[in-house]
Image (cartoon, rainbow, N blue to C red; front, side, top):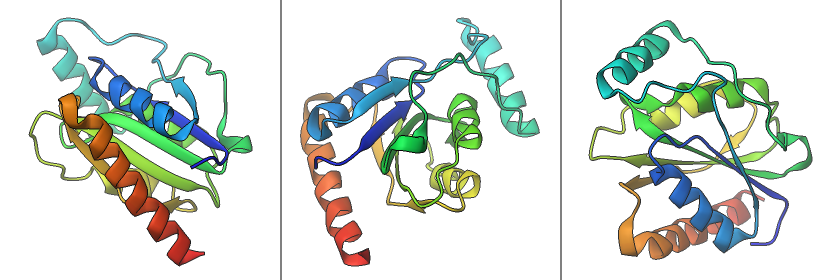
Length: 165
């Protein structure tokens, strides 16, 4: 898979970052991490209160500047942890700030066994003019199976994108 690929992710604990790095290794894409301008609290209870409030209100945090924007890429991999059954607000901010019209968007998520609920739908809602592929859900950081999990997902998405062409 050697096309014009951008991999963006928000990772709080490092699990989503590890998945993004493996996608980069397998695709040769450009990795760009997203950071909120104001970091989330390290204290879990305060963190959870803030995240739940952002999700409830639809607030999207401002982000630190990133090196790449989506304009010059055909394929965008977008990653986030599963936070309260949806995507992390920093990824929602990035998706909201970038025009992904006509691009292939491949979401990926790390989770700790929680329900997948609204993750893929949140991406579709934020990017109605993108072609959104099937999402990848990885328990934790995928452990020793991560490479195989991603290879299988990529092969499936390549087959599906060829059928649509």
